Image 1 (cartoon, rainbow, N blue to C red):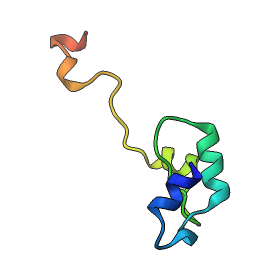
Image 2: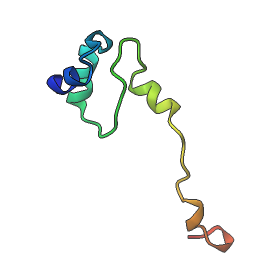
Image 3: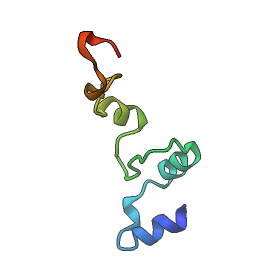
Image 4: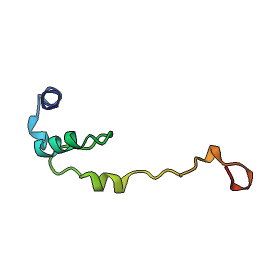
Length: 66
């Protein structure tokens, strides 16, 4: 993980919060999180995430039943 990030940030390795990067990698939640210094943590990212309906609009049938 560190080698991959170092390769991608070769022009500015100081843009990575390495402690946060290691924690994100260890959690392996399955979605990307920012790892730059001062970037939002998991709770903030989730709080700002777009909400989607439990039942997609295309799945609704007449009368509101599925």
